Image 1: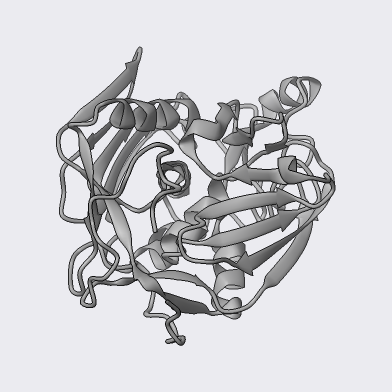
Image 2 (image 1 turned 180 degrees about the vertical axis):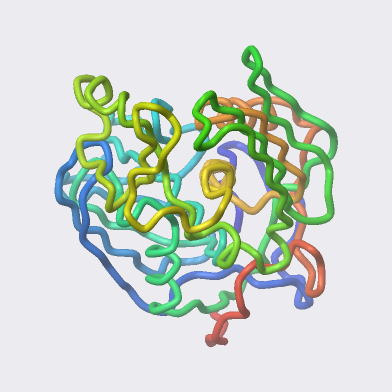
Length: 327
């Protein structure tokens, strides 16, 4: 089921393990309409069930031909300015995929075809919660093939000045993140979560993206944040001391929790769940992607592993509805 993970590699685990956790897809199609955070354009997106082994893929319905398919894969990430943007070999792009990827990871969805009529995933409320709700409404079903993970075998670290991201071996998937901003509304925040324990929905999914009032004009002049508003982002005022949103924060440390949310989505571009511990210090989309590239560049740093029932790597979300298993 994992040939799509890393082109040219072969999974080490057979697909006949009857005791293993099964791969998952949606029970039915479901869609939404919203605006792109950076483009400001209205976009419609539909999530579809997909066959086992096909992975997470986007299809630009506004583009004809085979070039419309864009794989949700670390090797397709080409732009990490304020988002994770994918581009296929034909130059077709899909941007701001991280919040949707985070929700798919949180619900343990392995295979999904995402049809979209523009170059950017709708931002919705700036968190992963609306996408999580869509998946819950569509329902989740198990497929015939065992669910496989990428098991980290040794420490892998990437650095950029005072920024750092690392993966170390672990029986499940956990994240520790540290941020430090000059704005007193944020300051220094640190958060740890074990995402193999059902905590994604309650502790991470509702954390919104954030930005600074004084940066808005610069970002829009550079083609970014044109769809951003207080409806889909937490905005800190120009003094750095106050949150402008009337409803305040959803969590006292919503800023660092959103960085965790982003990291979950960025790391799910590995093509499968990761068995490992992620530690990020001021990390962002660029460094998260560099970490995956460093991991897969070292064949001794990872292996495929079939997820067994009761293991720390079982899906984060509730168990899916059972479906007839196809051969």
